[in-house]
Length: 413
Image: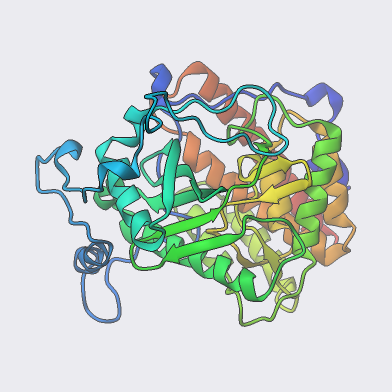
């Protein structure tokens, strides 16, 4: 009964679409606080969110912009010009990134102008504090939350991840800092307790300034988008699911990680905004009551295809900001939600979720409904273009499937 409810039939297969972004004139997903961790308004110390946010900015060496101040005027630390070499000494030829093992085609092209933007220079100044030998080569990402810069330390390829200066102006600044601190703690925990899956090796970290330097693993992302147009091949999907399940079945010491999701709070939040009906909320709470004695499972927490690299040695998991203890099947629920264009992969995920028995199935369904509610909240925004509206309708269809599966599960208890 459950399998048919969450595995669309061939006639219901729909083409996955890339969510539009601001670059093509249509709005993309809006920024919302991470699930279960809304930005607090006032802490136990009596300080307001603004006061605590200013304290966190001070620790990062940043300050909030004044009213009317543009992003270009945010003060950034200067770094020596020699830290961003644009030409090869002696012959004036442009620098090129070294070829990585297993890389095909031409070497990466260096864009010196991208390394000279104020935000990137501020990030590189933080990297230089903990890795003076770091030589930047390429800006991999310059977003509103994080900046990723590929470079080398000696001959070793590395990636530096920094909190973007633009995040200072975000209303979720405190949560972004907390998530970054959590990721640093996770990488340090993995040094002591090595997981059974491949992940980048920690090189250096600055907890206070939100700087993380990691090994750069050769490989390509399993997908570039959150909801990919083209799903990976069946063999790649099997490898990714094997890696995720291997992590989920790992049992590190219980004090190394913490629970990352308040399920009762999430249900109440989506119920209060009308995304869950009274019956939906009651059904989910009923399943949660039956899962009260179910052991939690270590999950990546953000198991998107874009956070998985397909390396020659096998899948590599990156971006561990949300890693922690969840109800069983959370990572599988995330993968199910984004693989809408691959019916076979969804059927395989559903079978894996049921293989652990009734409790594992119920936990997967609770996770799935909450993950789909989050995706709807991310993408159902005013002014969406036609492609995005099609994707929103697909998410609502998926949520209806999950609701029916939850009601069927409640009826069999």
